[in-house]
Image (tube, rainbow, N blue to C red; front, side, top):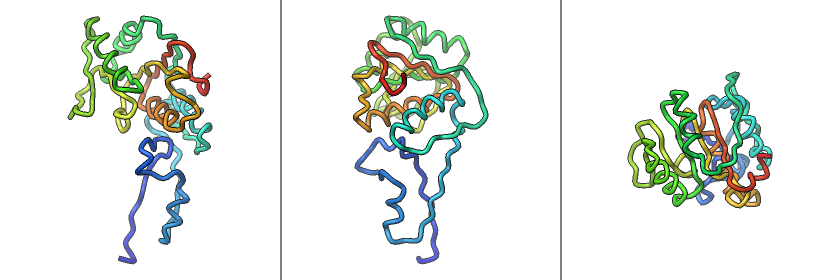
Amino acid sequence: MKNATFSIFGDLAQTIYEYRTIDSWDNILKVGYEANIKYLTKSYRTTIEIMEEANKINQYLNLSIADAVVRHGVSVSYEKLADNLEEKVKKLIGKNYQTIAIISKDPEEAKYVYEDLKQKNIDIHLITHESVEYNGGICSITSCLSKGLEFDGVIIYKADQNSFNEANLFDMKLLYVSMTRALHELIITYEHSLVEILK
């Protein structure tokens, strides 16, 4: 159908499944069809403060900088984890957020966070590959599973240098996905040394 048209949309900073993605929009031009590339740089989800921090990863990946709409919020908080994750969650609960996510890099950590906070009487849900829905409240989830979701408040669990390796593009994209899930507030925790790119 020569006159048919269609659109392809995507954020290259969120291409976490390399086997089903492209690394440049220019690849679309190589397929032999007439194509136009338009760059949509506005971010409507997060605040300016959150997008400025996430753009550190876009710059590192040599991708376009996202331009947040004019909506200010609280500054992104970088906090030593210690043993006070419960306090950080309660801080967000106190702001009457309807959706709060603690985002971990891997399933084992997400499960640990869930079990730890459950023991401390926090009403929390564990979202896994088997989960079929999320109805709000507090959840523990992995970076991969958080893609496509948004939360009022987000805590990134252990954004350490040894967890998110800057030499690994997959890690950087997972961190970007995690950061940009937050609508209003983002707390980034680290155990030993914060990932260098965010310093």
